[in-house]
Amino acid sequence: MKLRILKLHPNAQVPAYAHADDACFDLAAATVAGFSHVGTGIDHGQPVMCCTGLAFEVPQGHVMLIFSRSGHGINQGLRLANCVGVIDPGYTGEVMVKLTQDMLYDAELDARWSFVKPGDRIAQALILPVPRVEFEVAEQLTITERGANGFGSTGQGAA
Image (cartoon, rainbow, N blue to C red; front, top):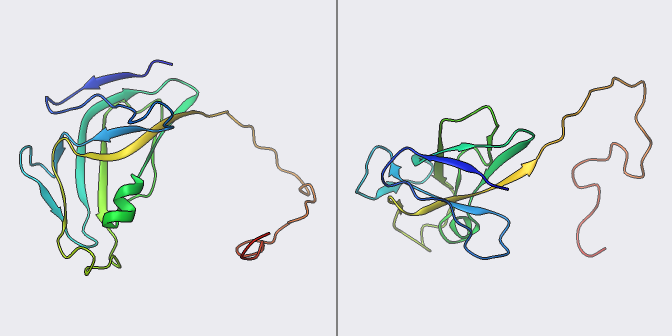
């Protein structure tokens, strides 16, 4: 599948897969919070807007999902402010990523703010097919073993 992109900023980087078998491709910052050459600190809990400088033409019947980079979360307590970004085929504007640092991130492990600068990989994304569904109101749903048992209903530990 080919994914058409439009570079909107000279710092924009064409997305790339870090490894041949990766599910997601990396997105990099073109500008950060309006600064094109200087790193921007992310204070605990204060989000920073990162512009990718890219617009995408997501194919009809598909969606582009944007996720945090696992290394950001583990090493710096960084995550996407909205958890997961959803880019529908109808949206062809610039993709932007808002990063925030968890308030509970252990400052003793890293007393500094996290810094994001143009060129840094800020998120990862993938394209998935999305089937259209028709909604049908039913009198009853099919009975399953789990039924309506929700959070914590499968227990903890090994099976």
